Image 1 (spheres, rainbow, N blue to C red):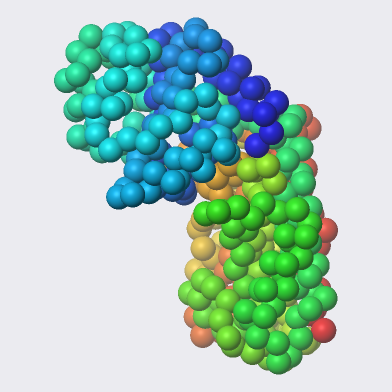
Image 2 (spheres, one colour):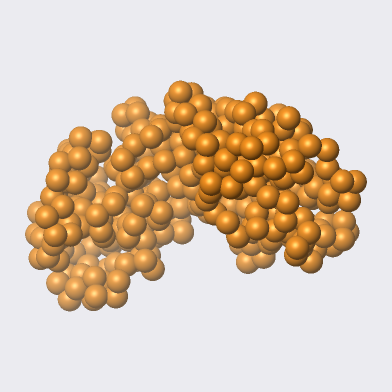
Length: 382
C-alpha cells in the first residue's frame, strides 16, 4: 500500500471515529485471512498470531501502536512488520498486561472504545479489557467500519483495475500455453511466472491464490490445487486467480476447453454464463445484496440448472479476498457507487460436467463496470 493512500485511510478513520463518538479504536485480527480491516490502517498482513492495532481519537498521527502476537522465538517477524508497516510503533506481545500498558499510555482506560473484529476476539480478551478498564465502554463497531470500507476511494479503485489487468494476464497465458500432455503444475508455473512479470505482489506469506485444475468430470469441484496430471483432449481447465496490486485484489475464474466440446457440455456452460450475466444486469446503486442473490436463484431455476449451481454467488473484494457485502439472502446492504464485488457462478453435474466463471465488478453511478471483462471463457485452448 502506498503511503499517500494509507494517510487517506487514516483521515477517513478519524472522521469515522468522530461520527461514532469514539475515544479510541481497537482493530483485532486473528489470522491473515481475516486481516483486511487491520491492514487498511497499518499496511501489515499479520501472520504470527493475534494482532491488535490501537488508535486513540483526536491524537497526533504519531500516537498509535500495532501489537503483534508472538509465538515462541518469532520476534524476527516484528522486525519485518516494522519495515512494511506505516504504523509509528510496532511491538510484539505475549502477555495481556503489555496491551493494558498501551491502553494506559494512550489514556484509553475510560470512555467509549470501538472494537473492530469484536466477534473474532476470544472471550478471555474481552473479559480482561472489561475488568481492567471498568470505566470504559467497549462497543462492537465492526459492521459500521466495514460499511465505510466497502466504498472504495479513487486510488483503491485504480489499484483494483491494475489487479484485474494482471488477472487477465493469467487467463491469456493459459490459453497460449495449455496443450495436451502438459502437466497441471507445469501450466500453473508458467501462469505464475507471467503474473509475477506483470507486477503481481509476491510477498512473504502472500501469493496470487492461483488455482489450476483440469479434467472432464466434477473432480474440478473438489480438487483445489494443480497436480501432476497431464492435460488431455476433451478436458475442461478451470483457472481461478486473485492477484494483488498494492494490496488490493481482483478475482477472475474461467473454464477453458481443450478441443471441441460436445453439444450438451457447450449448452451447460452457456447457461452458467447467462446466469452470471443476469446477475450483472441487476447490479446498480440502490439494489440490496440479498436481491441479487434472489435474482441468481430465480435465473438458475429458469435455466434448469438450479440443482447443479453452487449458491455462493459473490461478495466484496479489496485488501482481503472475501469482504462484505455478501450475495446472501440475509444481507441487507444497499449497493452504492464505489463498491467492488466478485460475481461468481459455478455449476457441477455429478459424474458429468463442471465449470466456473467469476468477474470483478465496480458499482458505478449508472450501473456497473466489469473490470475483468474480455470474454466468458468459451475460447478453446489449442
